[in-house]
Length: 486
Ligand SMILES: Nc1ncnc2c1ncn2[C@@H]1O[C@H](COP(=O)(O)OP(=O)(O)O[C@H]2O[C@H](CO)[C@@H](O)[C@H](O)[C@H]2O)[C@@H](O)[C@H]1O
Image 1 (cartoon, rainbow, N blue to C red):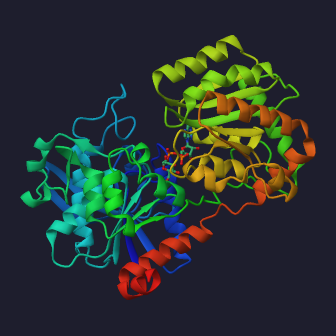
Image 2 (cartoon, helix red, strand yellow):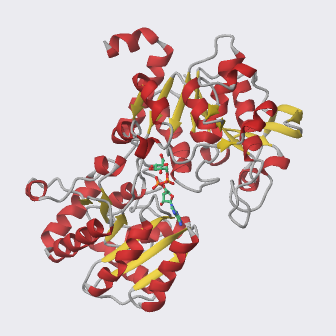
Image 3 (cartoon, rainbow, N blue to C red):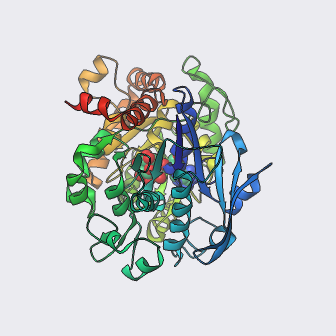
């Protein structure tokens, strides 16, 4: 079976968040199910630099007014189609924004171009490789399903995966006439969205199946607080919505072979983890107190509850712990953490920026990973933390509530607890969770138990790749689907 995956990011070539990790690792996991995935990605500078031995698939003189070439290549074990369109993608810095953090004005066109070409591949553009299913990730890829739907001619099945409802690709309606879609596509069944253009909305309407990245989030997005305007569409499509929890790449995130960390270790050799803790403290110039080293590797945003962490960080210092924060995002939250570092230079360490290697070192060295998200479709940081023996402290929402087993008395007694969950998701809730963490940390046996259980947890793609494979099978054979849902 051949799958065309459409994505704006793919690890290890271009990553701003979890989308890249999933787009990079799911295809690997699907191979075990006899599924071949090729991903189409934009030809950003980092992608173009990684290419060797490319072949030209197709050329465009006028793709939304620009020249472009569709290439095929296989860098870093990935099987890719790359849309080399310098006018759209040959820009320094992050993929969606300029150096000042402003969204590019032509994002509507850049990702419409990617999507249009993807839809052409789905319709048979490539002579020796035809996909059986097209799988679009997030709003950047959503129009590929819309183009296919309105092209007619019995398109292949279409899947839309939503990694985060907060990012929808909403643009002024006047761009519609430049998208090359038929007039009927500007409707409630198409891309019309509260009088604007909604790319994700259009993708959801054009999809045969919709996946979100955890069953809890699948339920949550049916309500306005989590659906963020799309709850109506999600409710209308609920029969076709399925939640599948993300897995992680067990090779990339493996403390037994991680090239970024000072000392490799495994669940069987927990003492070998200790030098990584000291190395982390040294790196940030922090004191080695008898309290836990808390960490956060995250976008510094409201979604991630990082303002709540900034507001409670003092508690960590006063109770005798240390805090390491790595991330970038809202200027106000960045400032708040930098200010905390200035006040408590030996207890709070902060790095503003995106740094994959440092993220590994933090997971390997910290005692606890704080993930106080206000909403979290799935979350990957807590899964990496489990694998690295860094106990996750998470808010009870979305995928966080499904992937971490709270250390309540029953779970501790049964030796199944893997972390701490808290609710309500506010500063007070987080404060109480921190107090629980301090208490458990002092009870060394319980803390080691949490760490051990976490490291034993299967966070691989094993089960979830099987769910995707099953879904692909159902879409290609609707009779099975009917039988299954009866
Ligand atoms: N400054 C930094 N330096 C280095 N690495 C950093 C970093 N800041 C973040 N990261 C890394 O980026 C990734 C973030 O992934 P998440 O899944 O936690 O959230 P994100 O909101 O990006 O993803 C969305 O999509 C994913 C995938 O489906 C869902 O899990 C999630 O809930 C949803 O919000 C992790 O690998 C994290 O370690």
